[in-house]
Length: 238
Image 1: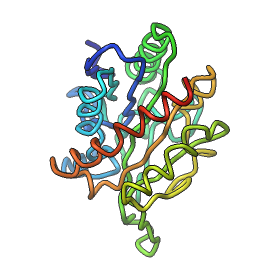
Image 2: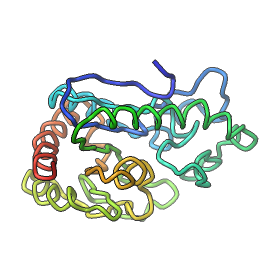
Image 3: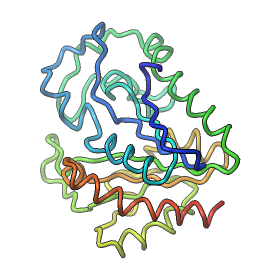
């Protein structure tokens, strides 16, 4: 298994769950120059997404691809030439170890293997559907006055087909749903632009509020809500 990802095999259903920021792992030979406590923070990992994605893979009988390294090592949800690939600042925290890091080496070691494996998995599916899973912090340290009241955000770029199906279903499940909140998929959608929109594959991108999926109860709740909605989106767009 590659150090760039963890694959969860739940079954053969043609749904691929993707969690780009599922891990806070930093390989032993990489020194970010930060307080290790920050690896438990949202700047290093999308809290709760690994657990929700694994639950969904087993629940739906499909595969989940979890990013195997911290977004501070390299951001898997960025284009190959994006300035934020190797962050030197994140939510007010300096990442000094990245200032002189070898970007090409980290791309070859982590970014390329992750995305190449995703492409192979999708190529093996007759009629694939992608669920992209992220989480967001309810409050930014660098902008504490910014209000982030949503339970879940739905992100998309040009292809909003699954988003339009999912949003009323998420609201009916009792969630406060943000359309393109707290981020816009028009701006931050690299992985889905590449594997979904770039190949005509329908997808649903969700961003869960991290404090709602920080424990097993919340993770089980969100997996239970998302599972039937993902199936509905897939079945209507297959």
